[in-house]
Each structure stands twice: as C-alpha cells, then as structure tokens.
Image (cartoon, rainbow, N blue to C red; front, top):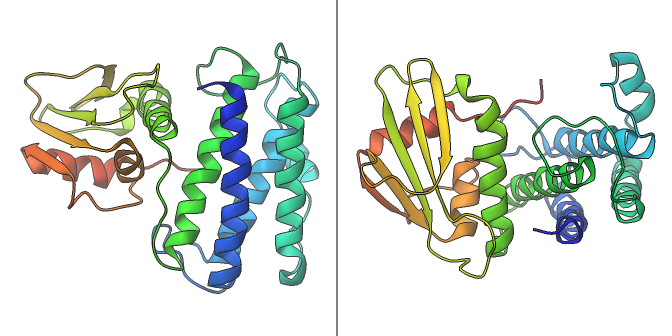
Length: 256
C-alpha cells in the first residue's frame, strides 16, 4: 500500500475509535483487551500517537529514553478532556505524516522501505486494531478493505513475527498456512506460511502445500482473526485445528 493510503486508514481509524469510545463509556471493559477499560485503551492509543509523532517530527534517530518519552507524551487528562486530547494527538500525527518529506530519517523498529513508510503503516494498523477493540466494547466490529487487511496480515506475520519469531514456539514442529480469498487487485501477497518449532517460528510468503493446518477466508476476517480480534468459527479451517489454536494462544504483541 502507498503511504497516503496508510495515512487515510490512520485518520479513519481514529475517527471511528472516538465514536466507539463515546458510545461505550470510559468505564466499559474491552473484551479483546481484558486488562484494559475503554479509558485505558484511549489513553494507550493517544500515548502511542504522540510517541510516534516525536520520532518523525524531530527526525529522532535514537530511541527515546523513559524520561524523554514521558516529556513527549505528557500526563493523561481527566475524563472530561480525554477524547479532545486524543483527537488533538491523532490529528497532529495525521497532519505530520502527510507533510513529512519522503526521505525523513528517524528511528523505526520493523523493516520498511523508508522510516516514513514504517510509521504510516504501523500507526494505521495500531489505530485500526484498537478501533476494533473499542467497537467490540459496544457491539459488532467493522471489517476493513481487502488491501488494508492483506497489508496488515503481512505486517503482523513478516514484520512482527518475521523478526520476533522466538515467541511462537511449539513443542512439536507444525505449519499454519494462511490464504486470503479476495484482494486479487492488490500488489501484495495473499498467502503466508508460519512454521512453528521448539526454537521459534519461521514465516514465509506463499502457500505451503503440505501445511498441517490451513486457514482461508476474506482478508478482512483473516486480519482481525490473526490479531485475535474475532473468531475463526466462520472461516475455512482445514487440517489439524490444534495448530490454529496454538497460534491463537501464543501470538500476542505486547507494548513492552
């Protein structure tokens, strides 16, 4: 996806997140993030937006210290000002990314064509996934366009677990193959293979003919399911379903 499409998704995700938070109320629990209330999740995403903006705005090439990060984000406001605070940080990040030069040099933590491409992509998916969390606190979770879903699956598998595969261990080696059934117009991949072993996981683009378990479905549904934001009950699961269960138990992305 182009940087502009990621920024558009970031903008849309933030607007939908605010709408869901207003409907849910700050004290409501978040089923897909059971350790957080709506209040805490809004605080988290607002924090991340300000943290990310600091690297791009300041062309910061070294990771922020804890004190620098705290100064960049500032304190959380009271409930009456929380959504306004969130919107200010979200809007500033969107405007910053749209105005930033393509050759902006700054720190980033996953492989990307450019630092700007990384931050636009990461913040688009950070915001979209947490938008889904907050919608889940109200009712139904909305899907995403196929190309955004495909891109998000690729970031999750090739980015997070491509570089951090040691977290995905299995006592017995097994493979999970993921196939998106739509998004044919997308330039990106539509299939991936996750091989989990006792020492960690190896991720490749493309399908494995001999996978132990195969997960098929629309890109939007796969995206949310692989992030553990929806059930896989209505998706096409073939082979050994315990392999998919293992993924859902162990595939977690933590802030720290």
